[in-house]
Length: 279
Ligand SMILES: [Zn+2]
Image 1 (cartoon, rainbow, N blue to C red):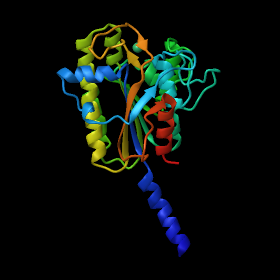
Image 2: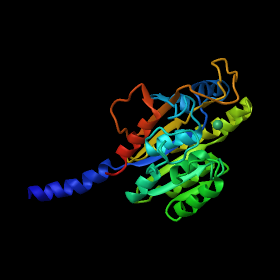
Image 3: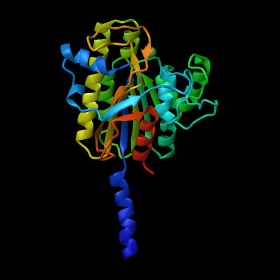
Image 4: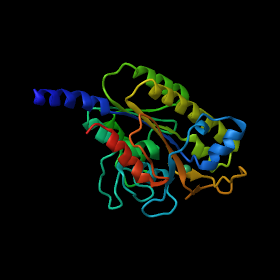
């Protein structure tokens, strides 16, 4: 009898603890991006409390690019700028999307960038140059047989569409959603267009969190990969490139941890997610 109880608990408890993941990446979204945009367009994200800050440096540079930072999230290793899904020694590393597939999750990758952009491809490709589009496309073809990967125009409506399609699914899912225009417009120091992109991302975040609130099995993690443009607290851009500033991280929904460190490595986000995925 005791074994039967144990067995039943094993099945049900297992399910109770299992988690869906929605990982949302605001490319280039620094701390001042949030406060500066919030002054003119009140943000949902500003109602949330960040769990802490992320140190974004890569293996070979104190200022990361999006390939190395997305690899830190996807693989849990600091790698060289430009590398996708590879260690600094050019060995393939298993990405969260691949781990999720092995655990029988449905995997969705959505980006407002091109589909071979550094952030999405660090979840499905293994290449030593983010600029080798030909090879990334080969990896994409293979990945697409198992994962649902799409470049989208509007992150807000896509998030709504995707999540409503998953409302009744019985299978667990891992989603990575990226808004790339926050970075792109910051490279151009175009504050207005950056704001529009951040507002769209913010609405997608609100949609995801409302989805997670209605159920007990979904965690939403919101991060940036790095800061872009050296935006000051007075909302002036000072650079055309990325900086090494820390970025915020948020964890919402069913909380996997009772306490969070105030300052973490970008690779820690990977392990936080890996611990949430079914064992
Ligand atoms: Zn950039």
